[in-house]
Length: 139
Figure (cartoon, rainbow, N blue to C red):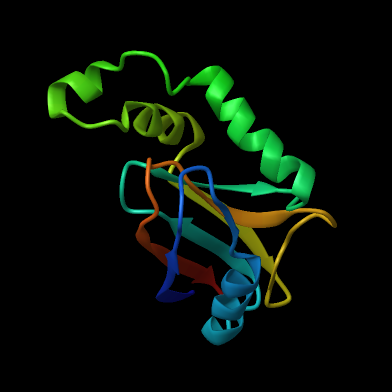
């Protein structure tokens, strides 16, 4: 069994930005030389999330609207009161979505559906420089 570690760095510009990282993950898998196994991508931090999506314009509009419905920006969050900040909703959204994703690796490629891409979701109230940790394990 072989293990491989690397990082993906991205910069976001705004809250609600969804960044397609599929190609970067695929490149890390190629670099690892692992043909069959799993690839974990993890976001250190509590206001970003990882998922899969059909990366198309309609969903790029639907997702922030859905976030607003389940964790509105115009309500009072205790987190904001405690820390004097404005990103309580960001923490709630990130907790629900989760900080990581695991993707199978087969024939040296991520196993994804036809319309499925791996994405990072910026949930903080401002853009940020992000470091995503990649761990690939397999043969």
